[in-house]
Length: 86
Image 1 (spheres, rainbow, N blue to C red):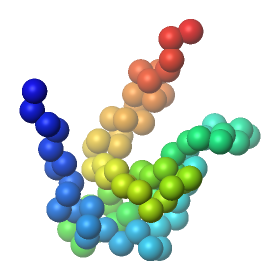
Image 2: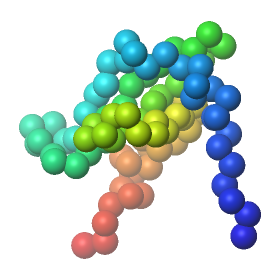
Image 3: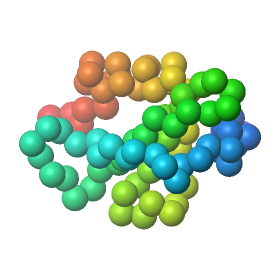
Image 4: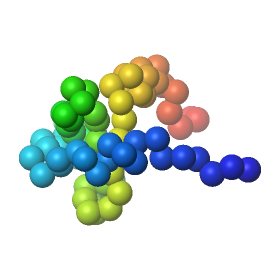
C-alpha cells in the first residue's frame, strides 16, 4: 500500500497563520471539550485556503484545504456523511 502524499506541503509553510482568526467548529450554543478550529487564510497565489487545527495543541500540524476541498467537506457535513451510526 502506498503512503498518502501531502499535496499542500509547498503551501502550508508559506501560509501566515500568525494573524489568522480561528473559528471553533462546534454547534451553536454548545461548548465542546474536543473540537477543531478553522481559519480562512489568504495566500500570495490569490487563493484563500482553509487551515484546520486542534485548539488544545495549536502548535501541532495544521491541515490545509483548497476552497473546493473545503466546500466538498462542508457539503458532506451538512448531508450527514460523517454522522456516527445511531
